[in-house]
Image 1: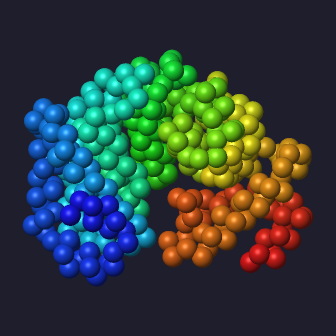
Image 2: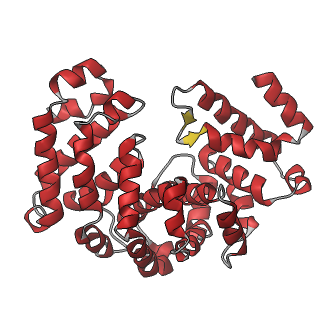
Image 3: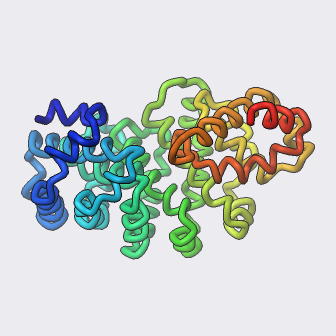
Length: 339
């Protein structure tokens, strides 16, 4: 069954609903998740069971991609509350704090609590995501996330995979706190998180990686989530002002990141620059044609997508940045030609 679940995103939705989408089944999963949040000690050494549970949750998550009928189904939503309890439990923070900076691997329980649970939220585009993100804020998790940054950021250049990947997933949750206008307000009382994200983006080890690495890895993922967090905040004028006045802020960070080997990071760097640079500065950007091509490609793909998003960049975010790019005559003509 587990081998089949690894391929559930290749199974027809009707098949999923027939043999998988059963209320009793999801209630059983929810019960196990809730017990983990309360009695985590029972599961610390259950490696095979925890691996199987992770595969199961990841499969359910994969099957929801692009399918509102499944991800907003009341039966699937039964998992929301127990996932919240896992993410807001002391075991999440305690487990993360105990990861050694030089650890290469995580055990099965660490993978589940630090990877599978936050991943289920961060890549869920349905009703569940805003419910979970709002719950994180209401449960004061932003304060604990900052504790994690305070603990580990001084040694960021020495992080190995286990910690890098765990901090990436935590930062991925924060990028959605910044995404929603309702939860974005909580960041105004937790402004030190912005310091931490800018420190991440200015880290030499992450910059060196993003400028030469074409494949996504834990370092690339962390950079991607961090720059997405900053970009999501720029939709709020007050937050944009706060960012620009932050002592860790420098436009040079984003001028470097626009040369990333990853298109998503390039795109977010360009969209941030379009909000902080004047017209002449944008005209003087090197590789502007290449950057504009990436932008137009994302816009085109997002317009064609049923959910109006491409690689987690929604069309409304692209359109808000289009204004900053549109005054360039050649860009204007290219957009007209494309659409």
